[in-house]
Amino acid sequence: MKITKIAVQKNDPERYNIFVGDKHGERFACGVDQELLLRHHLHKGMEVDEKQLEQLALEDDYEKAYKHALHYVNRRMRTEQEVRLELTNKEATMDHIERILEAMKERKYVNDHMYAKSYVNLELSTSSKGPGRLKQYLVDKGVERSIIEGALLSYTKEQQLDKAIAVINKKAKQYKKDSVQMKKKKLTDALLRLGFSYEMIQMALEHLPKADEEDALSLQAQQAAQKLQKKYSGQELSRRIVQKLVQKGFSYQAAIDYVNENFQEEEQ
Image: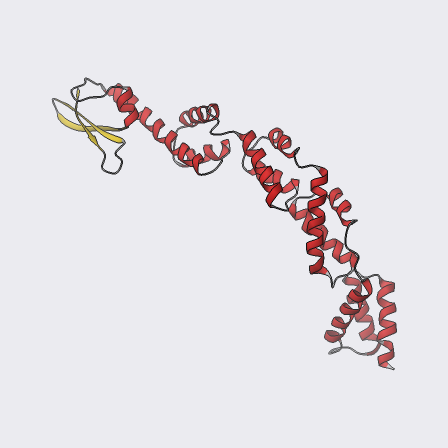
């Protein structure tokens, strides 16, 4: 059979429709990229067979997948796993996916080492995340653990401590009404969520700004009394206030001393 017509596609001037004809008439054979057209010197009147057409279709599928992958990584850096998943979703064959990834890695379009280092450096300069959060993000992106560990070497212990202390200084103001024990618990939970190790958190908590425990105790006691005195009075009210204060993290002795001093007199 021969190629009877080569026409530019309406929606993409870089792609062409190939038509072939034989004794049974003319038919559409396949669409090809401009690069394939030139590579194979396709032209009207050229003799082709079914095997050649099948090969052209396969090569065209590869070119389309490769161009899509290029567009995908041009928008921002991607990991190998991200590119693989994107091409899988586009129904590229496994063979084409692996070929594309090898070509892109060779040209440095995809580089998990660079991705991990860039991500860690960006987070160090823009966020309060600890190494645990950074590590989990990279694991989710499919980066090998050895690469992750290498990238995290730039996140020094000193930097971790500085960031953890900065978080403490910021959040401690939100917890000024809490007991020191409750404040430490809330700060520990917050830092754990950010990805700091328990050991680093304990070091950072040593820099917790000193707060007036008595002021916090008084405030919590007054708030508890306002709610509880609607239902209780006398010894039962005092007992309930002490219970609330202990639940808030104040020591039992500090709570009972405060209640005895400030509420017993009112009852008399």
